[in-house]
Length: 218
Image (cartoon, rainbow, N blue to C red):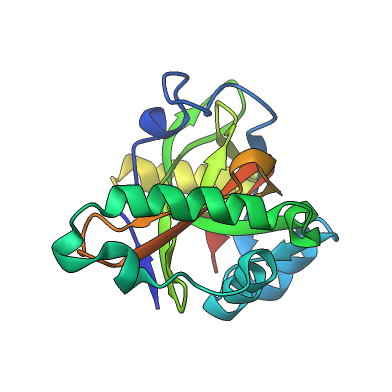
């Protein structure tokens, strides 16, 4: 089961005031039509697409072996679990050192929306928000580092005019953003608890972004 959080306004996600989200890399990229087979062929050949729960679970297995005992870490009514989480993160960081999975290039998907038109780049600014994916490890939310700014999806000329007319009529245009990169070595996984559900484990792989790809749903 995949749980999508609400889309966040573009300025809040990619603005320079957010830590780790500075103006780096090239966020101006073509806008393509999303088809699963086409998506994989568009991505770099050496990346692992982590979209389905089973794919994410295999990746986490390779990194850390087994899920934490979330109930034991949370404890009775969640008392003093911050200290236990701190210990879990430090210990797992230590045990993870040198594992080959740390070097793997990965791609994850976030839901997005086309925002205002950018005449300078002949495309649409992209608002993007996180996806929460339910797995046997708990909820997984990828955490991107160094998202480029601006993030602009550039369609073909014919598609651009169609989209501009739809936006003028007030239509909401959803998109999928594929983010490709590698784990940040010094904080590759962060373990925590979901805010919305007491005791629900949360795993955040921290990915330094190297490339973005934008897709419209078919």
